[in-house]
Structure formats: structure tokens, C-alpha cells
Image 1: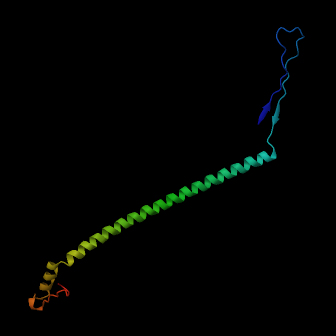
Image 2 (image 1 turned 30 degrees about the vertical axis):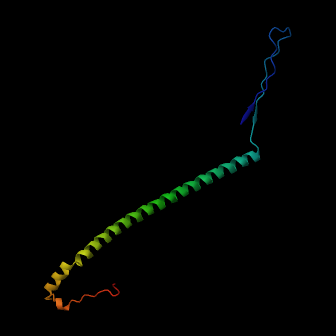
Image 3 (image 1 turned 180 degrees about the vertical axis):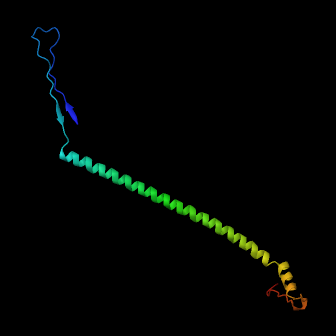
Length: 123
């Protein structure tokens, strides 16, 4: 709101005219027009809508980041399990273990049954 003040000019000091009566002030309150009110309302709604949209995008980004972190954690756990399983396979398929299991089952190593295949095409 704006307030307008009207003042009458004061007489110059030292002038010989009669003293004028006290200065009259007139106040008038200026209101907003319909178009201005509508403009402010539209701007307020627009700013509120944009703020809500930005907040929803930030919330969605936070949710996605949380999911990414969870998946990376699960991936690290699975990679650890895979590494342990590879180590176990290596230990179970070692020659010494196979020879030991064969002896437990009553099997003997007979070099006459072992055949070595040579690669063809050697120069």
C-alpha cells in the first residue's frame, strides 16, 4: 500500500504576508487493482509450484542414490562370496586332494594308463 502526502508550500521566512493557517495534510490509501492482485497471485502460485517440483526432484534423487548404494553393497557381498567359492574350487580340484580321495576309494595310480597327448603341427 502506498500513502500519498500533500503539503502546501510554507511561506518564506521574513516575508511580510499574513501567516497562513497550519498545513493541511490529505491522506489517501492506494489499493491494488484487480489485475495487479491477479498477477501477484499467479506469481505466488507459480513460485510455490516450482518449489514443490524442485523438492520432489531432490527427494527422488535421494531415493535413487539410496538404491544405488544398496545395490553396490549387495554387489560387494556377492563378489566376496564368489571369491570364496573360487578359492574353495581351487582347493577341491588340487592334485593332492584328488590323489588322496582316490586312495580313500581304493584306486591306485597306474602310470601305464596315463597317456600324454602331443600337439600336432610342431616344427
